[in-house]
Length: 396
Ligand code: LMR
Image (cartoon, rainbow, N blue to C red; front, side, top):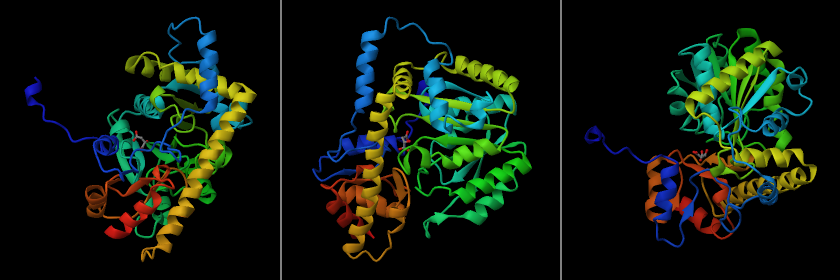
């Protein structure tokens, strides 16, 4: 059977890490995969996570299966973190959540639930979007379509074209949105966009599906959730896939959540049973370790405070790197205007370079970024920013 297989190309994002690690240039810079790095280039374990792990190690008496829905403390706490404890959908008991294997696994369970509701329904993703959205969601049997989102030359959202397309969606359509820190552009929807999308969803009956993978890395925990919270209060139904990879630094532990808000409590119970049925047929039960840690942190005021403060520090550092990169490129005489970088949010921005320029940066300067010229801002540090900006200016 396997003689018929041909080797596939490396993953466009994760493959960059391997290429970077194999590069012997001491000046090499990794701006590829979306992983937070500190000034020393390390991806630290949050202090609150370490403390929760110690407590867990002491207290845990069994590793038997959790239920299909995963840790109940996590499921309760994560909904409050996403929507805010006072959110009307939580007060009305119209929301449920299950642990998912990372944000990706949660997106896939969400896609499967949509497909059992309306097989082959349209899912609209922004152009551009995280490259894995289309294969991950589409292979559940859904029909993937794109709406215009970002004007690469002008480095801004294509508001009119985007809303024009969204205004044509109806009850057979699902609209995938990024809650914050848009991947790959860093250009986030503003409150006017969220309000208009909410109005269109109410009027035309499409279902929002929101991917929230970076809460707390752009404008803080509440700021990054503002649009999503508004939308979830305005529409009768919404699907949310959540990742704790970045904001809890739990990447390899695979911690995410699928949350669904429905019209009434009866539907919530029915939807929960479908979420569990999908999870059972895909992977049976989710990983438990990371979800238990997140549940512990969010339900302990002291751990929560420590985690939120550390996350806030990360957010501040990323925003300051944005300013530094913009300023240094300008100071070194760039004829291209990079001021958009400082006004965007989260881990990513697209520099607006051609694929050839990106390849030259890799080949001649050992600077690694995704072919779309998406950079991971958190890969910049005081020790590489000089070399990085010189390299960028040399290829443009
Ligand atoms: C990224 O976009 O770099 C991250 O979401 C990691 C991944 O899985 O692609």
